Length: 424
Image (cartoon, rainbow, N blue to C red; front, side, top):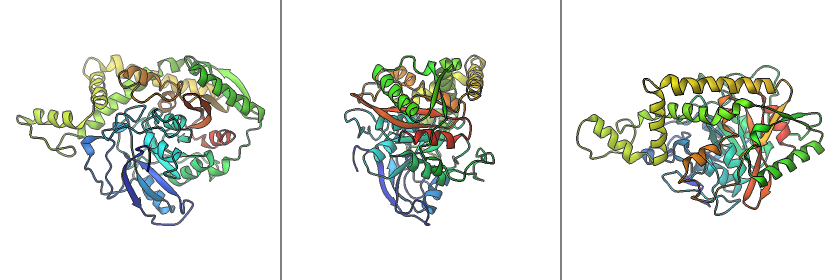
């Protein structure tokens, strides 16, 4: 294994035979694997070994896949670089000396380096698409409810989805075929509308003749010049293949980053309350009452980024500030959903650079969390609206790979896979 993509090496054998026979899959370390530790990139869960498989892991094994390890990630999924892991950073195989993106950076790096054929990540605000773009591979964020989250350690449960990473769109779609579908153990899963194709992989035929692609002007503002030029060249490639493009406006996305972080941090402050040293967490020798013991465990177990988000989320939910922050964030979320619905009345998919910047140099963004948060501007609106999106390689700048993001309407995976397969 290379580039520190894995926290735990493993060899979990298949339990059945199917479309993933002979394929190796790396699994992000916030997805439960029976008998193999699941750390979430945190010292808080360094020794935690779950007694059960996540639904997606069960489906991988039944489809013939071999799980080859648990991949590095930003602690509890909180980061854009895979540098906040308690187990150290992962390096980008496609741009050495630079970050692989986050928080599923280990999964993307494992695929880019050839350490696994395929990988699973989780996407709360772009955590599959960002590392896919930075590492030059393909990443799909499915429609909320298409893939079971049973066995995924929760960070912000109204936003996150498990998604596939692969070298090509067709291979990512093959993995999506295996993990998608209703699950009795996750009440948020939904059956897709009738009339959709049985196989997403079959949609990866590269036939984009007649497709209309909308380009939101707001998602090009502030993009790095090299990223923008690479994105425009990829759009021209699509036009040459029969696509029509037109500018559209999504004014609500100007508020999306702020709304996303208020909602995500609020949900994190609630979900991570269970890590108190009684049910989960390291033992400490703290003396005093329960509050002091609780604080000592969380001081020892959580990293700085996790502490920052819990504190801000707790503040946003506190008495007197709920309406000022959390309620307004939910209102902004509804506005984002309405904007996307309006856009899809005139176009089939929306396209933008996945990330407005090329991969950061390692250590570059750690001292400036706000810079890291703003880098998510093009990906977080998709999670707020619970829509599907794919990041495909669009080309490279001198600083590393650039991804092109295609967003579809709810359960529109077939269309974004078809469009993406024309490029990768």
